[in-house]
Length: 448
Image 1 (cartoon, rainbow, N blue to C red):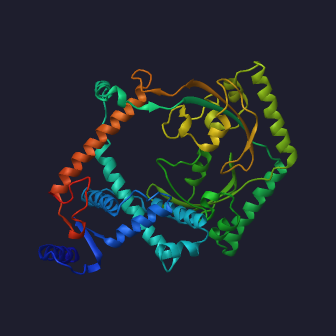
Image 2: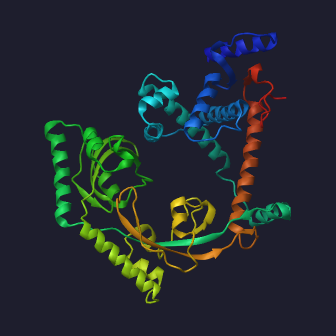
Image 3: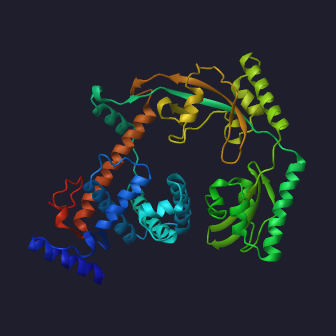
């Protein structure tokens, strides 16, 4: 608090003098218990650029305004005892740094871009940036989490939009798929099991590093660069049932026996238990698949396609009967839109790869057999179909009620956030350096 007092005193004096001066540590603002340095603005610019955001129409004042918002949220998040999961943030930072390094060419180039002397220095800075961002996000969520809209509010919101300004929704459709994975042999499965048993024995008997083995041998690209590390929670683990059963049955320091999942064979090392949080490390190996099994799988899907096209069986029934994709099989192959969590996809907003596979399909038509891959399956085959196509149109209250409801809710939430911000800006100590006095902020940071 003493440091903040000194900085605040300095800002007050220089504001009164209103003349050229040197800024101590480049202080741009003080908000509550937080200081915003000019270097923080530069860091934010760098972070946005490396994340692929176009900075062409983004000014320094806009980035500064966003930092002020974040600091206001962070200050009140701490006041309200809101906490974040440091392990999850660290895990995300590890993925983020590795992805950036791959994107820019190497870790050395990334360090040069960020002007850092070491990888640890970069990771520490990224951790603080992400932690602060998560605190701000949680504070914002707490403001709007109980806000709902009634049907009458949705109707009033829709009617308040002039007819010529109503949103236009793009062509929408439903997408279904049938997926087959080439099967492996029992012999190949046993080879993988034996290798995992060897890794486990080497760690237990010889003191070998589980982390090193995960980096060298695991076939899970999402965790391999982190030494196989995941943090999972007993209450809401995203892992599949079998994985959770094994992970939560272990004691600290224990390594599981190899076990099979739809993604391959795992062993899990339980590193630490922190209440409901489990820090684990994994090694994933997938049994090899030979060319004969690949060709047989493709041929099987071609026959399924022929049965659908001939009218012998519906696409939905064929998916329930034959698809290997557990997530879609019981819904007749219907894909869920990850953005809206329903079955409808807006054609121009879907994943580019999926779009390329279904863009030219007529309603009810079945695609050719595609060879594809995903995080855990280097080879899979699939066919797709589209249904319930609804062409581009101006928003219709009855047909687009759910979308309009979402827009009405967002509008109400934004108003609540704006109301909260305006109130807290006047309730919180804020001092902005005169260098930013001409910024046209969206919020009243200058308290004019």
